[in-house]
Image (cartoon, rainbow, N blue to C red):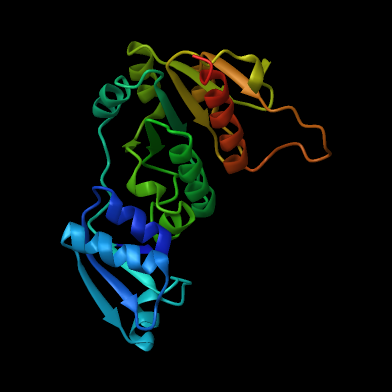
Length: 243
């Protein structure tokens, strides 16, 4: 079982097709979102159990759960082929590839941006990637429940599969040959974002069709990867809004 912690993440999970086993709510919790959780759980046929505050606090392990915790079955992962086929149904397919994102807060923020930007799916690596746990679920504010996530052992091989299926691979790199807003994204795009410290790995970069950069004007040479991801995703959306 996996915990989903927080009001918004639990509500979004109930609205999705996530397999929720039970929802725990601390006594004396009120408000619009709490009412929506009760209603959504009833619609889905999910059991809601109210707990005394001491018991609830023990279940939350000291985390700020906003009085709501849900338990769901293990995270569902899509196969690469399945993800590609589903993404092809979009007018302008957009996939996000994460190369060894290791911080749970970064991963959660990235997944939230990916869902808000309408990404067709996210591909993560099996090794050297933060687990999708309750921290990621909470930071993502429910996005995990709505995203198609694929886990692969070899990112380069996944890139090769994407190329065979008509995707153009766009990687982010400090020495990219173009600024991020100079590339035409009106094509099937697989956007690669790299590790917090090292960026995308050399072999991954070599397999990208394009390498782009975000120009820096300050004294600090780079942005947080979750911020960079949001900038790129919404630039892609901005350009495609004219299609």
